[in-house]
Length: 94
Image 1 (tube, rainbow, N blue to C red):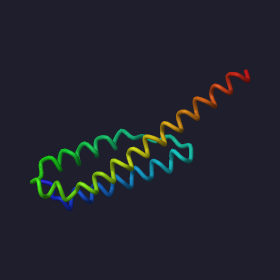
Image 2: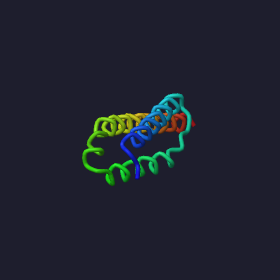
Image 3: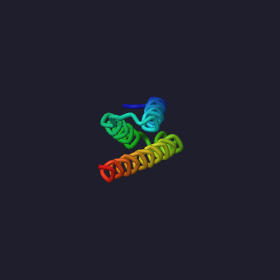
């Protein structure tokens, strides 16, 4: 069974991965996010299996991760929009 402290540590690791992904996206790099989804799912499952009090102690950490994931999603949408615009500009020039 995962303890609240173990889950908190995993949340911190995943948050760090999200911040790294945001930096890479900002630099125009490709980012493989496949493992990120699995890790988030694993954390959610572990928290759901915890006693209520332990899981509730992680609410702020989980909310912070959700906010970071939302910012990453926005970054990716912005990057994809820019790529599409650049692609359209190049097609117009041809």
